[in-house]
Image 1 (cartoon, rainbow, N blue to C red):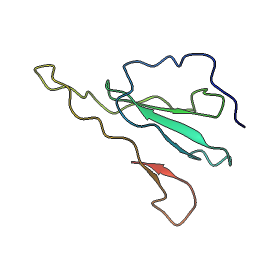
Image 2 (image 1 turned 90 degrees about the vertical axis):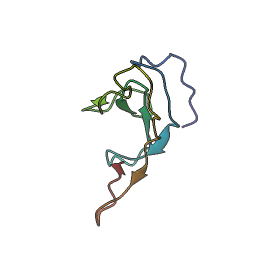
Image 3 (image 1 turned 135 degrees about the horizontal axis):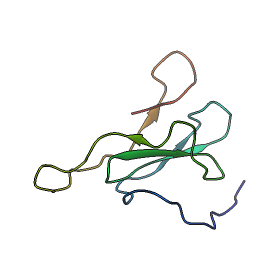
Amino acid sequence: DGSLLTQPLQLQGTIKSTPVCGDINGDGVLDVVIQTGDGLLYAFNKAFLPLSGFPVNLGGTKDEGGHSYFTPSPVLASLSSGSQLDIM
């Protein structure tokens, strides 16, 4: 609807990838998916409220020495015959 986010998002870790938009819950409205460097995957609705079941812990993104791994951006695509988007 063109509204601007006026409150900061409360995320654990810093955003290390490009956010992606798509309707992942099938309500006909775009959602935002963000991955942080701490290995958490967040999904928010258009009001930037967390979707049910998020964040998801994808595991750490650091090796035993504390060095950060590359954090890829999430990708949204339909992997089945339906129109529901999956997060990869």
